[in-house]
Length: 413
Image: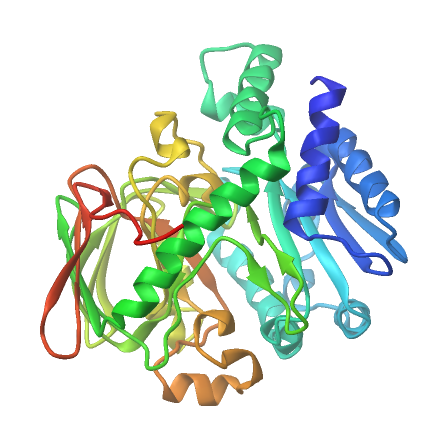
C-alpha cells in the first residue's frame, strides 16, 4: 500500500477518530497483519503530543492455538490482573484506538460451547469497569485494516495480493482518505450527520415503524432517548469519531416495547463464525423466536448470555445511498456492513444515547427503558425497499426513510 496514503489514514484515525490532544494517554489495540498502519498510528500519536502510547498486539493464529490446544479448564478462568491492568489504564484515561480486521470463520470448527464459556468469563470479568466508558471521558475509535483472510472473503476471485490491493482501495475511498483534504471532508460529513441528528431529536418520536421485505416491526424509544450521529464529545468538550467510517444516526429503543419481525439483510461475523439468513420475532420487547440457515447455534448462544441479550439496545438509521452500500460489496465486517444498512443491536445500550445517561447508573437507565446486557451485537436490516415512519406522542406520523433513503433533507447544515 502507498505509504503516503497509510500516513493520511493514520492522521485521520488519530486526529479525527480519537482526536489525540497534547498530554493524552493512548492504548492501541491491533494485530500482527496490520503492523504498517499500526506503526503510522503510533507515530502520529507521539507527533500530536501524547504523554504515553501503549500497544497491545494480538494474532489470529495464537488465538486459534488456545482453542485448539488449551486444556479444558482454561476457558473458565481469566486472571484478575488482566482486568486490573485495563482498569488502571481506564482510571488514567488511556483513550483507545482499535485497528481491526474481522476474524470471520477463524473458529468455525471450534465447539460453540467452548467459545461461549470463554467469552462469558471475559464479559463478566470486564463488566464492572465499563462504567469508565459510560462516563464519556474515554475517547475511542474503531478503524479497519485489511488482512489477507478478510480480503479473500470480499474478493474471492482475486489472488491474495490483488485482493489485498482491492480492499485497501475500497477502505481508502470510503474513509475519505483519497480526498485532497481528508480532515475537511470529515468535517463536512460530520456536519451533515449532525443536521440529521438535530432533526430527529426535534421530532421527539415515541416509536418507529419499519416496513419492507426485511421487516414489519414497531419499536418504541426509551424515555429521554437521544439520537447520536457523527462525532461524540467528552464532558469537557473534546470531539472524537468513535467509528471510521460512520454513516449512522443511532438511539436507544425501549427494551420492553417492540413487536413484530425483522430479517437480517447481511451475514453476521461473530464469535469466530458467520451467521447467515437469520431473522427474529419480538413480542413485548423480547425475542420469542429466531431462525438462521447457517450457524443458528451461534445465535442461540448469544441469546442465552443473559436476560438482556434477548432485547434490543440500539437502533440505527443508515441511508441506502451511503458510499458503503453503493460500493455493492458485502464486507463481512460489522464496522463496514452496519454503515451500509440500517441496523439493530441485541444487548447493551449506550449511555451516550440517553440524555444524561453518562452520569446515571445502569439501573437508572434501565428504568427509562435502556437495556443492559453483557453483549452488544449489531445486525443489519435494510435495503432499497425499506420504509421507516416515526410516530409522535400525539399520533402524528412523519416519514423518516422512504425506499431506503432519507425522506427529507435536514432543515439546515
